[in-house]
Image (cartoon, rainbow, N blue to C red):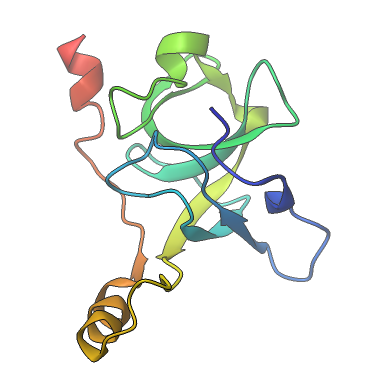
Length: 144
């Protein structure tokens, strides 16, 4: 169920940015296992943003989810993969103080299997991209 490596914790730095590594399938297809994220700590969160937060029951565990809806006391968060679980449907509303930041950018490391020139070209074209807000993120919420 962990979503980010334990190295994702921000150390006091001059800039409010940090790098995190995704582990787990709950944000597929937006994020995949092994993706690296550029996290903007303390950024304003809006509905549809991909965010990094502390797990409500295990606060030493960091997770990445989509902020689906603002509710009394915090955010209702959902994973993009409806079958993976581990979101607000399991633990309820996440208090604001547990939301750490917003994901701005995704980088996919190069696979050792892609050694051909065509494989390298595909990797160059698809490895890095901004993580955009999905304003229709609550479609899963409405379907329940």
